[in-house]
Each structure stands twice: as structure tokens, then as C-alpha cells.
Amino acid sequence: MSQLGKILLYVALVGALVAVLAGFGIIQKRASDAAALRQIEADAAASKQATAKANQATAAAQDQTKQVQSQLTDVQSKVNDLTSQLTAAKSKQTELQTAVQTSADTAKKAQDELARITGLLKGASPDEVMANVDKLNAQVAADNAEQKILQDQLQAANKKVTDLMDSLNRAGQKVAAMPPGISGKVTFVNTTWNFVVLNVGLSNGVVPNGELIVYRGRNFLGKVKVTSAEDNTAVADILPGAKADIQVGDDVLN
Image 1 (tube, rainbow, N blue to C red):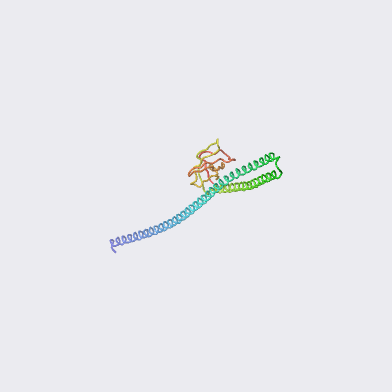
Image 2 (tube, rainbow, N blue to C red):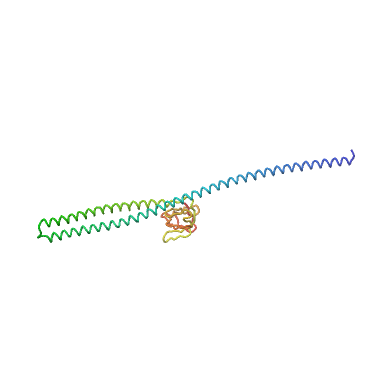
């Protein structure tokens, strides 16, 4: 073989080797790209599943919030109804008290009239005196019977007022139930009257008579009891037993 032939053979061999190496690099690059694509697809599927779970959790939380709000509305309606019944019962109680007093005054007048007539009719015949006495005694007995009936009605009305007030108190305690997860901040502190203002309210699930815990960092400071609430704010009394002075910026939660 001539020298030129050898050179051309070497060049061909080198070219073939380079082509083989280039092909192997391309194959490795495609394998790497395929693996990366599979990883991206797996990550995308995992992210999609996590998003679906998060959406389900959000929907469940929203449903729970709606249920709690519905329950609070029902309880508030019951409180309003019991308050109306209590007002009506108190009005009836006042009427019965007035009627009892009127009946007692009437009986007193009848007894006074009996005494007066008995004194005036000393010269009358026994039959006339006894007839008048019997008539007045009958009037007194009738008045006493009416007074007894009115007293029984008054006692029943008093019991109804007591029962309604107990029902109202029980309903008020139910209103105080708040959904879990409430979190806010103290925005104002009045040490003279021992109350605070919070940046959470009715829209966050805060209701009157509900209690919240006050923290500063990881330190428990004490508890506060809500006295009034609006959409985004609430006023609460600082309950006895606080371990430290509550300040603006402290955290509140339930």
C-alpha cells in the first residue's frame, strides 16, 4: 500500500472513531434528556396531586365554616325568640302583680265596708244585719278566691320567667362557641378598665362570650373574654390570673 493510501486509511479510521464517539455522546444526551423529561413529568404529576389535595382541604374548610356560621345563625335566632318570650312573660308578670294588688285593695275595701255597715246597723233587725253581713262575706270570699287565682297565675308567670331566663342563658352559652383556628393580634390595651381590642371579629368566627388565649412568642400570658364583636374587630376583657402584662402586638388564638 502506498503512503497516500495509508494516510487515507488512517483518516478514515479517525473519522469513523470520531463518528462513533459523537454518536455515543448523542445517545447519552438523549438518554439524559429522556430521564430529565420523565422526572419533570413525575414532578408535575406530584404537584398536580398536591394541588388537588390542597383544593379538597380548602373546600372542606369552607364547608365547615359555612356549617358553623349556619349553627351560629340558628342559635342567635333562638336567643332572639327566647328574648321576645321573656319580654312577654315579664309584661304578663307585671299585669298579674297589678291585678293581685287591685284584688287585695278590693278585699280590704270590702272588709272596711263590712265593719262600717256592722257599726251603722246596730239598731237594725238581726235578719237585716245578717243579710248584709252574709252579702259582704260572700263578696270578701269572692275577692279572696279571685286573689288566690291571681296569685297562682303570678306564681306560674314567675316560674315561666325563670325558665325563660335559664333557657336564654343556656342559648347564650351556645353562642359563645367559636370555630377552631382563630388567630389575631392585640391592637389596643386599656389597663385602667382591664380590656383589649383585637384585629379579629365576626368574619373570623369571634363571638361574644368566647375566650381566646394570649401569647407572646412561645410564652403564655393569659386569657381574654370577648364582650362585643364587629366584622373585623372585637373588644375583650382580660380574665383574672394573667401571668404578665398584655401588650399591643401580642398574639391571640383559640
